[in-house]
Image (cartoon, rainbow, N blue to C red; front, side):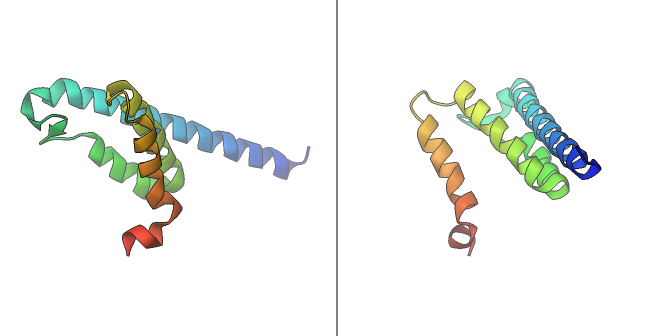
Length: 107
């Protein structure tokens, strides 16, 4: 195994670790938001203060694709834990549409 192959594997492992850390932080920020601000809910699952939105911005601007993938994984997990029982497939497909064709959806 050459040095180049070893560095590629290490880079892939580091990106996987970043995705996992981002997903974990986003998930627990969502849970913290539920605990701290549930009494300030404007409507069902609509809060005036939403902590994960700041993390979302930070992860995407600093970590690019790895941060976005971590947010996506955490969002799917949050959907399975706190979402409606019959909306899983709809939510996963709907979230993938802008990723697949951003030109169509953004401008």
